[in-house]
Length: 251
Ligand code: URA
Image (cartoon, rainbow, N blue to C red):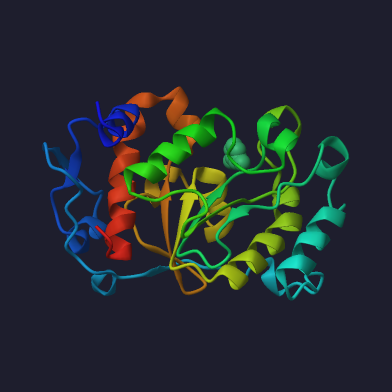
């Protein structure tokens, strides 16, 4: 079994899935797929053919407490942050990792125990699956990819961050996004998607649509931790990754 096949098996995607409809059609409805033994996902439609759904809200990037202009300043400000109660209960802040000029930005929810211990996002089991998802679309952590979270500190017992904690922390991510200027944001799971889009709606209603975060295309998929609990949903995550590839015009 070669590496590509191993990755696809990991994602429950072997033989490989491919988009049946061009993205312009797929964007209008749930992307549909057929199983086909092809080498790589077919993607023929360029991003400019897609219609952006403008859902971006004026979020906290504008709030004055983000004084940081540069990466070092921003990292220091996050390290020093005590704006919510999460910092008191975590080991360290988890800023984000990767190419600071990446085309792809993947956004999760918040650090878990492994991330809290190591100071890097997605380094536990969910992170391994995320790495495999990246590899399946020929990406790798740190190479044109940046990975960050909605909140920088681990919520106790891995609970979801509260709206207040998100509101306090989101300006840091907003500033990271301004500095990175990615070509695409992939929101991993409901907390990431709803926090960035400012819409509290079910994840399913956000998938398969090209959203807009302050002029940057954004697509939504399942959180890898959810996929570990519900492996039968991995095929849908693959649809979302194919959709993302189409948006980037890279497939
Ligand atoms: N889950 C997340 O949302 N982020 C991480 O960094 C790890 C697990």
